[in-house]
Image 1 (tube, rainbow, N blue to C red):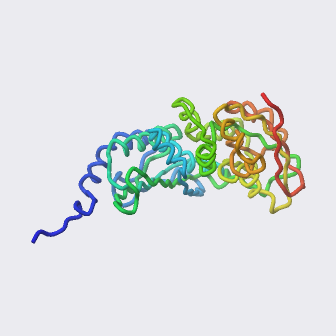
Image 2: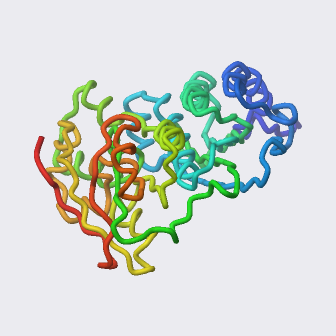
Image 3: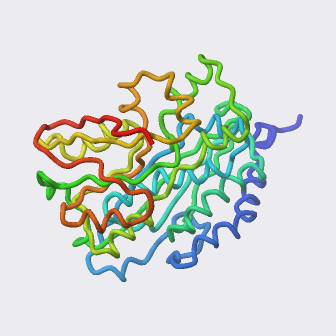
Length: 333
């Protein structure tokens, strides 16, 4: 009587091992300006922090959410990898840290090398841009647990900075100015609502519209590096994801009695507006970034310099003692 094998159960460990070898070039791309302290592919990855005098490390964990369903539907797998990196790296950047290491978790029904390689290629492109190392990850082949054709994605980012450079929201004061930088789209949150609207309102998207709707989350490392180069140390920075401007900014300062009223420019994105017109207006502020993906809270004396950093920066408002965050559209462009 023949014995059962792992491969018969739907898991091919040799295919998984060869996949790691296949993506070695993509992994090496992320070790140009930073290097691991040990070899890639071992049980854990290390990084030498001895160049820092007083290093503080920061970690973050996030995924791509239900946007992934649409990315798979429209065959935009590289975007999924970029979204995964940005959703994690941006969170680490908010603390004033530089992203150093990134790990991914991929859960699938069956290993399809070409599909996975495209996702990793997207990760590699974004990680190379912000000098972050793809330090390792986990590819879990789980027939029965993950539906055929679906992919589960999670990411984990580790950053570091000097203790003196860590941002301190306790330094926020009345009169500080909130400067915002534009988003490329909805980014990777709120897509349960986006998908509901598309389905219930029977919205038809051309291939070009779908690509625009599903554009990757922006990386904001250049904004952070630009502020640092301009010798501007914000009291705080926020990556505007789930919860929108209201929740993401509110968690920083409302418990200490501070607030703000934001005047946000009209979101000049035709595909986004095609969806937003069917959403509850109040709920939009609590769900989407409304066109602003990054916010820095700076001293009023630094505003002019801050507006020259990156592209598209705008003044959104200033800190007050209202204890709440309120928003309105300031103008239609």
